[in-house]
Structures are given as structure tokens and as C-alpha cells.
Image (tube, rainbow, N blue to C red; front, side, top):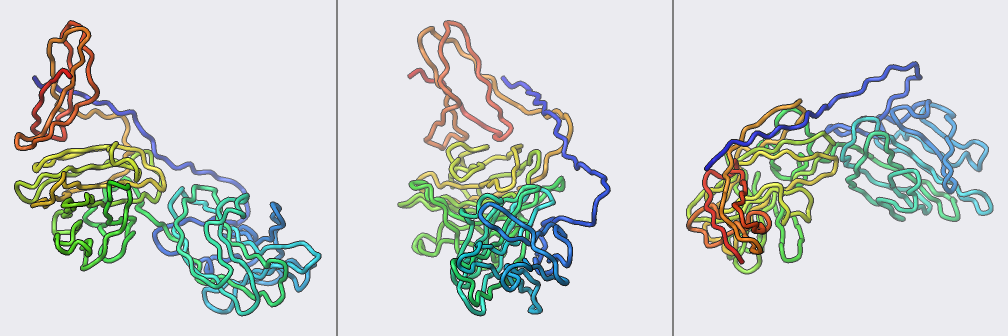
Length: 439
């Protein structure tokens, strides 16, 4: 028989703490989806202006440089005022020259940037260059991590980094002269910060609206394939607006294939010889109490038979938040935690054959979940049967009679000599078939 289950959720509060204080006009960096140029917010005459400090590092010690004129910071007692960090007249360029005359202290030129906004995935791009000399450029997170850089180079190069920066955390741009600073005229060029993932808010976000048009990672969304045998992900190739595929499987219709249509996202896996899931990955840019994920997984043809999975974390495809198999698919409504840098996956598997596997994700939305206590009513099935003590029983199910595969519902149930019951939610499947076996 069917019974109604009432699921009560604990209220989650998502607020902002506002503090008033008497302090100087020093404003921290707040990252958004719009590009923020370090050149444009470079401090004119105040340390900490816009959340930026200009310093020198000797080992684990950081000391502020001195402002000697607008946008120019030095260590005046030292040789040629080195280290020096200065906003150049060349647009986008910040001069940063270290100090390392033999026999004196080695002083690296450090630009220190603090996140004073909410925690977020931040994409950091730019380049390092020089007009003469020889230096090492390096970028790291956290004051103690100069010897574990996120990026470094001893020759002019560009960088494109994705960094999780929580509120109050810092990213450092350092220049090291080695043992000699002769003619070490170095600089940073076009350093830019922007949110590098999907910002979760209390406004519903449609996956259809944010699906990448031409660029992987657009809106924090990646279109990929997963080789299950090795757990390896790789990006699909763009071939037309909102269309991505795997060109090397040309004899098998370039599968996996993921394409945005007018009201759904078509996702076709590959399974003739090597099982490859069609995957949509979403990277969360910020932290929130939770995120609610709703939508429908469905087939675009018959008798295509696939497995749909939604999971969080690249290695958790076998431990999904939600899963359904069969041509009719099913609807889903999931609430899960949401931290900056978390990765959410929508995957389709061909179940051994990709013939007519024209699957789709429809009406998928993501929304920051912030409501107070609420009740949601779902349907469920109660299965009850007689048992014998000393035996164990396994409940199996499938979602259609055409499927040859029975899936386990939970763990085996020990017999007691009395009737036992098992409940199964039916909110994601309108139809299920069950059988009970005793191994």
C-alpha cells in the first residue's frame, strides 16, 4: 500500500552580519563575476587600500614598503630603494623589482591581496614580464605558503588560476631576484580577478540559461565525458553554438554528445566498446547554507535505456545524490550542501549499449535554499513480508518491465521470525516493480 511521508527540514538562516566601526577609509577587495583589474585598484598612498598591501618578504617576515609618491612604494634605506612596487604609466602594468645584492638581505617584492567579500572561487589571470635581468615570479595563497606556490615561472609567461578564497583569505604575488638583482626590471601585466564558478543565490538559476555557448567553464559549467574504467574526466570539443561532442568516435556519431535545445539539454553517452558517460559539471563559486536542485531526466526516444545520476564530487559517481534507470527517467528534487569549489555532476550512462540512447535533462534549476522550517509531502511504498529467523532478504526493484536488470534497494534485511517492513520513496519514479529474494 502507499502512505504519505512528511519530511520536515530544519530551518536554515542565510544572513549578513553588518558591523559599524570608527575606522580609516580602507576598503577590501570584493570579487564579482565582472573582471576586476589589480591595476585599477592599486593603492595610491595608503597600505590596505582596496584590500591590497605592498610589502617586502624576508623569510617568513613581511614588512610594509613606504609610499614615496602616488602609486609608488619603496624600501628607501636599501640599494636603489629596492624592493620597489609601482603603478606603471603603461596601462595594466605594475612594476615589481626585488632586492638581492650579495651579502645583504634578500627582499622579495610582494603584492598582498585580501578577499573582504564572501568566500568564492576566484579566477586569476594575467602575465609576468621583464625588460632585463633574471627573476622568479610566483603566486601563492596564505602568508606561510611562499614555498608552495600555485604558479611560478623564471621566464615571462601568462597564468590562468582558479583559487578558492574564503572571506579574509589572501593571495600573494611575489618576485624573487635570486642571488643578484642586477637589472632585474620585472613587472606584472593585466592581473585580473573574477568569480570563476556559478554564484548560488535565492533566485532560481536555469541550467538551460547558463549552458556554455562556446567556452568551457562559462558560468562555471563544463561539458565533459567520464571514462568509468579509470575515473578520468576530459572536456568535450565545441563544434557549434551550445553543442559539444567527442570527435574521435566519428563512427559512432561523435558520442558522447551534449547539446542545448529549445527546452532541454540533450545528453548522449557512448558504450559500444568503452563506456563513456556524458557529463555536465557545475562548479559552485560561493558558499551557501544549501542548494536545491530540481528538474526532470527523460528519454527523447524509445526504447533507449540509460542511467541518470546526479552526484557531488568527481569520485562519487557510484554514490550519487540521485539516480534512476530506464527510458522513462524521472523527476528529482534534491537539497545538498553548497561550498565554494564544490563540483556538481549530471551524468548519463548508456548501460552497455548506446543504440537510440537519446536522453535529456529538462527544467533543471539550482537555487540557494534558505527558507525556515517547512514540510514537504512525498509518496512512498511500504513493502511488508513474513520472515524466518536466521535468513536474510534482499529487496530488488526495477522501473520498467522491459529492463533485465534488478537493482538492490538498500542492504539485506535479516529475518526475525516476524513480519518486517521496508519503505521506499516514489517521488522520483511514478512506477516501480519489486521482488524479494532470500540468498
